[in-house]
Length: 255
Ligand code: PGA
Image (cartoon, rainbow, N blue to C red):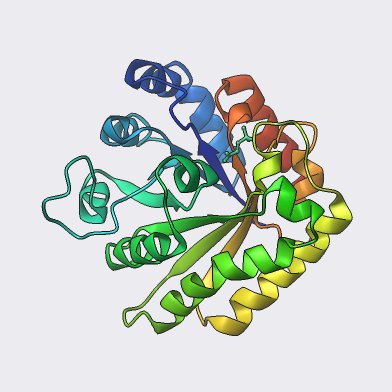
């Protein structure tokens, strides 16, 4: 089955490092994409998007942004509109990442607006949700996920244009960059619940990703969990070898 593997490069690579990654590994990336029917998306920093999209144009790898403005246009210094992202060759965009929620004070209402802007511009939103360690320990995971998801699902259900697809990435904040990932039983329950929520509340097709300390050791097992349609990968996507090992683990899993 086709899976969606999204590399979140955060602010970890410079422009030159990002483009070198594509150029240095162009033929290997092309081979990988020929072996695999899966979708791979790389999300670099804003100024890198256009050049990286061009550098990857012979592969089927797509590029995505890491955030977007909630506004269509106007006097919003420092922000980037969804239409600009689309014109730069971007077909996916992460919103609601725990780091933008924390450092850029992105609220659930901002995320709802951003989601609508992306949908209007035919960019597939990758909406991140996830509980903190504290919420986990208080047994509030489903309550937090419900709060983060409800406005988004309502906005998608009410959106009055055709929406091809949306993506939800479950990323518990305590799993990001820490090396710990949730137990398989917990992920099984969470993904069953997420699938039910998305299917009940919208008529749009969707993919569900797991993110947080994904690596080549845990990728195949995580992708085997029912309703996990792909992965959002941070640290392990920065190095060609570990990124490929995740894709290969996955190809192995598929065969
Ligand atoms: P990580 O990051 O894979 O390094 O934990 C994932 C993310 O923040 O999207």
